[in-house]
Image (tube, rainbow, N blue to C red; front, side, top):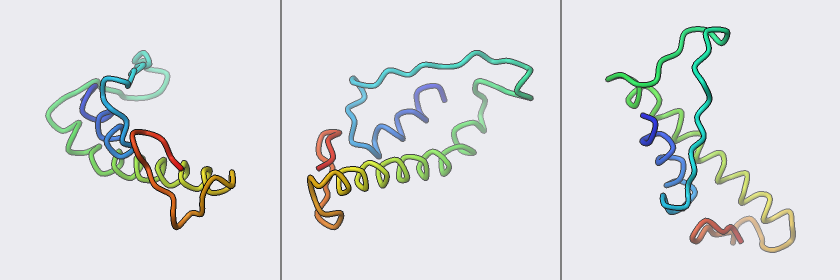
Length: 83
């Protein structure tokens, strides 16, 4: 789970895994019940992570379009660069 979920987002953004650094926060009871794995972790978080990756991709494409570098309909992602 510590690798699988970040990999999903990297895949959605076309970022090569070897360029990804994952920084994990500490588990703290002040934030409620938490766990760092388990057999249900990836299946239960798969769709939310895919949605997060898709939303991040859309935001980056919108930012590229707003910068004037491209039109939104022509925006493409290539090797983690949006143009």
